Image (cartoon, rainbow, N blue to C red; front, side, top):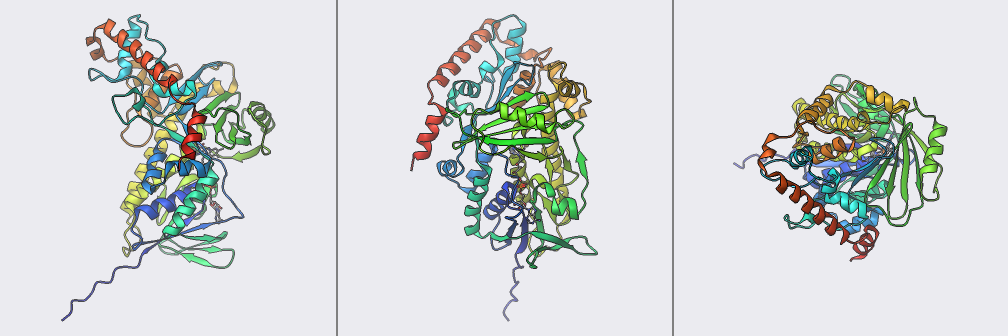
Length: 510
Ligand code: FAD
């Protein structure tokens, strides 16, 4: 007798609602990571509604995402009008006239088993000439010189001690991913969702109805509908955690302008009376905007400020966006997973939203329910939600740090954020650094120890003590080593090509 064949279950029907950066990153990521025989991917987007149309600066992690898809970097740069980003320059954040860079790279070198800052702090406390903290980062030196080259693969070279991200046109990136994903099995439907059908007993979403009358059924729905949060927020009613007590900015006025000569290899964030302005240089234009708090700045003031801050002719009228800082209590509920703005919002001070999308896509791919297994296992959702909370909460702490440690005395917004009660998790991190020089060092997600050191030091928080193990190194050797390092950094950075020159030659390569 023939053994009975065990028919493989029908593919799990995954419906992605929304075609902004979140929707297309999700579609492309899942198409790459999941076996097409087991998962049928459909993406619905509405031309009438469009996308949020901002979100142009990224973090180095995006390179892993692009590499996972197998994208060619030069082609990607051409397609998205991209430029390279070595970090963020913060102007006036610590105090009026102050300036520092949060670089994508390390500070100094670890030696004697001790993190670099302890050697620097110890020599400084002993009255040695230790230079400026930021002179010990190669990425900072590259920003100051306006130069760029790819990191050296030889780990002994100072030119290997940085990473980089991109500035790009977010609309062009979504189109690029769409062109990548659709030939790889993602079915795209254009149409506006007008209704969501849920099972009366289980509460699971069964289908979404389009204005055309079509109903799209699915087993798992990924809500990438932007601020509307159509499925997770509106339909499933998952609660919102409001963080505006810590991050009071709730508006942005965005305006692109003609590009200035010499594209800077960094994003600039400049503190203003009611918030801060951003400047993001692309190949074909510069993106600008003013993130502000409506409690401290009117829309008219914001418009005047941003138009006065741009360094090229405006290419459109300033556009107002409204938001509130916070996140959903859970990112995965039943058979709905929210990714992107539908899951939460943190102002773009450290360009974290696209990273949060990437992290959620990766976590979801790892936790994807199997086809034929019935409703999603709640344990998968619980694990996703644990990671979701870690990513959002750590990012929130890092952003709040920029605000709370400021010396902009006499300005109402800045006085308010300096004096507000902090999340306990952040208060602990600052107290630990002040008392011991130790900075957080996460193995998961954002941000590395060097990033925390950049912002802690940049905002003027100096530790009262250092690791006593650093005292074992002879003091004069430490000072010599620091001086030699600063010299090596400056000489190497000065020898690199100008950023604009590098982009032109890189993007013209076949
Ligand atoms: P959206 O772009 O809004 O896409 C939503 C999609 O859902 C669209 O395709 C829409 O058509 C579709 N949709 C909605 N409703 C329906 C419906 N009823 N039927 C069918 N389709 C529907 N992030 C960064 O990482 N770096 C930055 O520099 C940065 N800057 C920012 C500046 C500002 C002022 C703001 C507000 C955000 C910024 N972000 C930034 C965040 C970034 O813009 C978003 O994370 C990113 O664009 C993803 O958006 P999204 O895809 O979730 O939503």
